[in-house]
Image 1 (tube, rainbow, N blue to C red):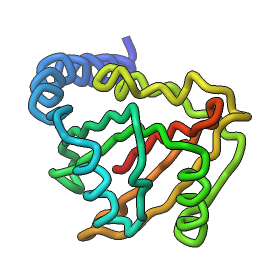
Image 2 (cartoon, rainbow, N blue to C red):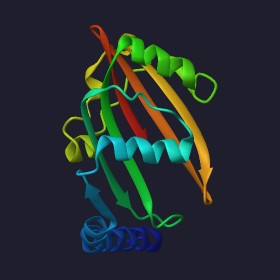
Image 3 (cartoon, rainbow, N blue to C red):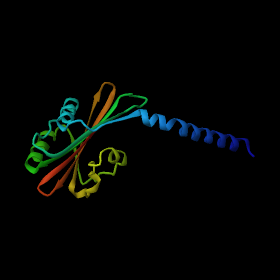
Image 4 (cartoon, rainbow, N blue to C red):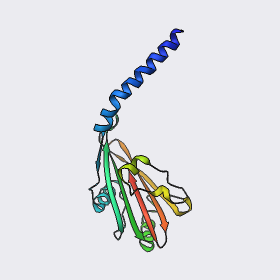
Length: 166
């Protein structure tokens, strides 16, 4: 057997062994979920970081967050919130953020199995692209670029806002 082929096989086997041993440890200790965060707490945190005002009249709301560790930042926090707002409240919010956030129409959300597993109410992927307007911005927070995505879905006479930051 060729030495380089044998070396490649042994190296690959070592990587698989390391993954089998360490992945469960890293996954179990690296991600903590907090689903008991209130919507108003989530929105207040997001407003503080991004300076984005949020609608104050909403219904059918859900919120949650989870933390994970990465090499460049050991304290990453993902915040997700889902709101239902009346069309007039949405249009008012849209006008307030048009200078702060980029806006893209007709972009379908991609199914995020990781988020869906943690938060079953996180379902922006179930709506057609024609119903979705995506808002996006970023900011620097202590040597880290924080991103904010909002998928606004037109549904009957209201809008569903799927808000995610990382």
